[in-house]
Amino acid sequence: MAVLNYYLNFKGNTEEAFNFYKSVFGGEFKGLQRYKDAPDSDKLSAEDREKLMHIALPIGGNILMGTDALESMGHYLIEGNNFYLSVGTESEEEADRIFNGLSAGGEVTMSLQKTFWGDYFGMLKDRFGIQWMVSYTYDQK
Image 1 (cartoon, rainbow, N blue to C red):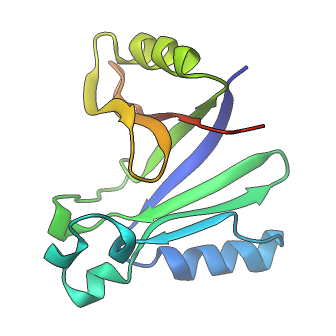
Image 2 (cartoon, rainbow, N blue to C red):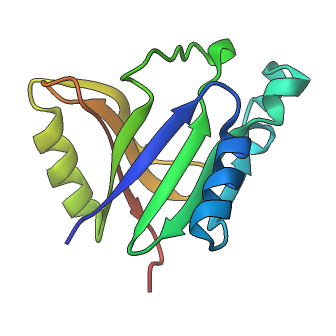
Image 3 (tube, rainbow, N blue to C red):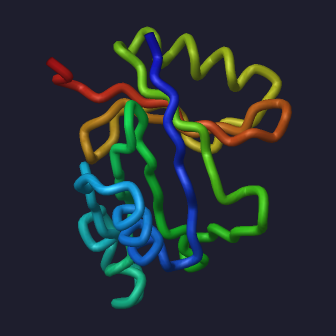
């Protein structure tokens, strides 16, 4: 069964926001990746390389995740587009089914694919304008 989590985009202050959320909810960060860890990061400014590409904070049975949406990478935030619903699946097949279903009549912004960080991952905007991330993490056992 798929799991639904929350993904927030920030204008460069993700780390500050997540340290605040951690102080409120407690717990430990599950993942933290900076843009400098990504392929082609040398094309970014020194400041942007230190920004967060991904962070996750488990809260109860869910995971709050976030990223710095970098304008240098063509990401521009306006109120209302700064979040995604993130679906974690139990298999590639389930990821394909959910991704294809949600993208029908919508817009695929990143095709479902194996990524450099090791997940099967894709992004889309459904026909109602809601942004989704669909992923399968290998070796879940």
